[in-house]
Image (tube, rainbow, N blue to C red; front, side, top):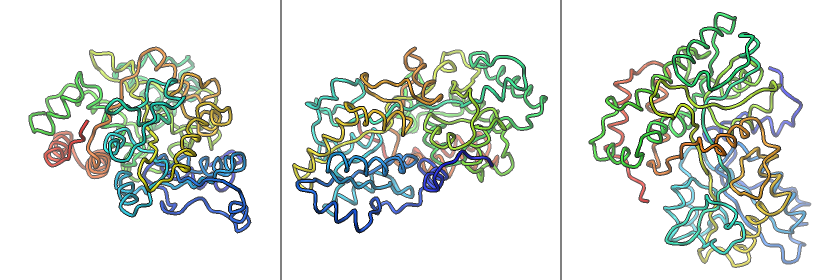
Length: 440
C-alpha cells in the first residue's frame, strides 16, 4: 500500500469512515498542553466556544484550524467529534438536558427543523445570509448556515479505464446501465478482474445509496409518505427496481464479492486512487481519504448508470448536506454567541476561512463569493453538474434511524447476497410501518 507522506495523525483520522468509524471520544475536546492552557487563561477578553463536528472525516482539519484561529483571534475553540454510535440529534439533546450545549452544532438539514424554534438563533441579519440560496429558513428566520455542498454518484478513475480500453473515457457514454456493463466486461477482459468497489459502511448504504430511491421519484415527499402510511409498494416501483438493477451490477463486479460487508474503506479508496479498480460509489467527501494515496491524475464523479427513461442517469444527487446552527439558549452567553457568529462570517468572508473550506477540507462552498478553482477533482465534478442544473435535490426528511436500520440491518445483508430483492423490499416496508416521520 503506497501512501503519500502524511502525518501519523492525518493517517489515523483518514483511516476512519466518514460517519461510522471515528474512535475519538465525542465529549473530549481538542487536546491542549499545560502551556497552551496557561496561554489561554492569560488572553484578556478571549471568548471560548464549542463546536460539534458531525463531518468526522475532517476532524483533523478542524483541530488544526481551531489552534490557528485562536492564535489569530484570541477565541478558544473546542472541537468535538460526533459519536458515531448514536444519532447527532440524541447527542445534542443530551447536551441540552445537562445545560451544556455546543455553541455551534453541525447537523443534518432535518435536525435544523427539529431544533429551530427552541434552540436555533436567528441568523437572518448576518452578512453571509445574502451570499447563499441554501440557508435554511423556518418561520421567516434564517436558522441554518450551509457548511458545504456535497453530492453522490459513481467515482471513477479515467486513467485506469483508458489504460485498458485505449480510448478516452466519456462518462455520458455509460449513462445507460447496459453500456456501463459492457465497459465493465471490457475492463475484465483487459485484465482488471474486478473493476468495482462498494463501501460497506452502513452510512454509505443507508444514507447515500438507498435514499436515491426516494430522491429520484417524481414527488419524493409523497412517495415517502406512502411508505409511512403503508400504501407504497417498492417492488412495483420503477425507480426502486432501476436503482437496484444498478446496485446488482456493482455487486457482480465488486472486488470484495463474497465478503462485501467486511470491505475496508481505506483499501477500497486506495484501490480506486491507484487504479486497481475503476469505479466506486461515493461522494466528493471521499477525496479526504483518497488524496492520502498515490492517486492518478484523472479522477471524477458521474451519475449512477441506469436503464431509465427519465434523465436521472445524467444527474447526480446533492445539495447542502451539513448545517451549523448557533445556540440561542440562556446556557450560551452573548459573548460566546457573538464569537460563534464571527466564526461563521470568517468562514465566508475571510481568505483563510475560505481556504479552510475549499483547500484544507476539500468542500464545495455554498456561497457565491467563495472561489472554487482549487477544488479537488470530485468536487469540481459536483460544481460542473450543479452549474449545469444537473443535480437532483437531496431528500432531508427521512426518519432519524433510517441510516442505521436500512443501512446496517437491511442493505448490508443485501450487499452480502444473503437477502434477495423481494426480501429487501419487504424489510424496508416493514421498517416504515413503525418509523417516526420528520415534521417539516
